[in-house]
Amino acid sequence: MSRGVYWVDVSVLVRFLTGEPAEMAVKAERLLESGQRGDFSLRVHSVMVAETVWVLQSFYGNSRPDIAGALVPLLTEHGLKIENAGVVVRALESMAEHNVDFADALLAETARSRSEAVASFDHDFRRLGVERREPG
Image (tube, rainbow, N blue to C red; front, side):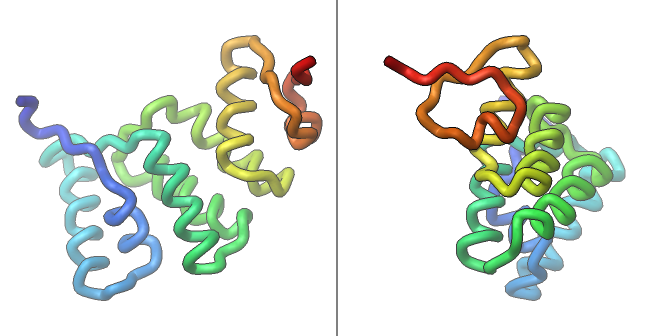
């Protein structure tokens, strides 16, 4: 088992960002500070980012621009190691800019980063500026 590497769950990200409940938010902040100091490595999977977006939007009622405005600095300035960081950050920014679901923005940015296209019936991909092929 790898020592000193922890994959961060949604619960930690949401507690840190919302401050609720207060005692968990303090613990989440301590964890992030320890990771930032280099006491250990904290990693975030893109699925956890997607779930965090969903929780902040559906449960807390935050707007897409507010979510991106909170998550981008957290993911880029707190010593976290994000899986496919550039793609995830661009997807958050694209989600806010084009008012689309994070999952669609992440798929579009993943395809764009590989010079590939998306197969979908969803017309949101036009707004995201990625090549789209409609099945059929």
